[in-house]
Amino acid sequence: MSGSGKTPPGAPEETGFDQVLAFTIPGRQARGRMVRLGPVLDQVLAAHDYPAPIKHLLAEALTLAALMGALLKGDGDQLTIQAQTRDGPVSLLACDYRRGEVRGYVDHDAGSVAALGSNPTLAALFGEGFLAITFEVGKKRQRYQGIVPLEGASLAEACESYFRQSEQLPTLIRVATRASGSGCVAGGFLVQHLPEGEEGRERLHVRLDHPEWEHVSVMAGSLTHAELLDSAISLEALLWRLFHEEDEVRIENGPALVRGCRCSAEYYRTVLARFPAGEQQEMIGEDGVIGVDCAFCAKRFAIDPAELG
Ligand SMILES: [Zn+2]
Image 1 (tube, protein in one colour):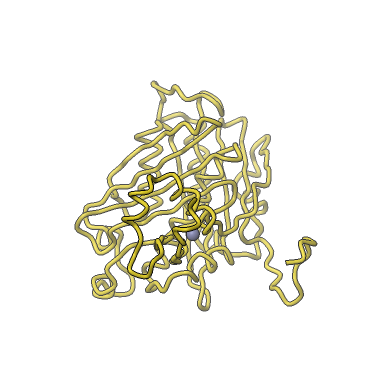
Image 2 (tube, helix red, strand yellow):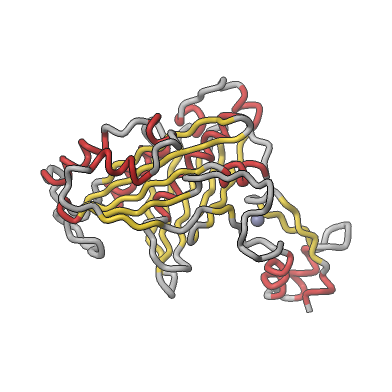
């Protein structure tokens, strides 16, 4: 790496992908995020050898992580999505977002997933599952977690339920994903009504029939999957198409989306060094090292106990 910040020669010039666009419509008390993911999905998926339905599921989850994560403002703020079940072919889906960095993985039974065919429903993949969404915000990493049943036709619908039930925020979410060659592209759109303003958290008496919100959700509802995925239309142009009749739509570019993971041998050495010597000893495998797996990267780190101090 030269660190010059230039695109290396021969690298594909992808425009419009791995981007976040933030917007607010002050006259309608609405805010939203739009995302398009391309190379970043391929980078996350490349660490795993997933069948097509699982790639599709993880691409949708990463898109949702980018949409909801981009609502956060602080550098260390994090959004985590976890979908879990006891009885489905997919036992765990984990995804998170921090300042533009996304990562994710899916634990599943390959044989059971294969038996479901090429286009399994969410219910077929998870059985009776639940979705936990956690926002960690501020210097003290204050946690806000909501858990909703994994119901509806898609993860996006389950996320809408989360906002409605846990946050009392009317929210519309659209996600489209498409296999592209060996990889994936995705587009996502989220808009929500903030009757108490951007910062308010106490929303005990939200009127779900608010006319301003109804207008926004009707306009947003006309957005198609084809538009979300069409990289010939920029996110700004798409937003304009939906809301050009509004008095004011404020937009702001969010951080570029990149694949990111906090795993490193150094990081695990620091974590392991906090354990008492006796417990460290018990972790040593037959090969004389402490093996630590990063599920996000599908990578094993061999930590030499002698380096733990
Ligand atoms: Zn990792």
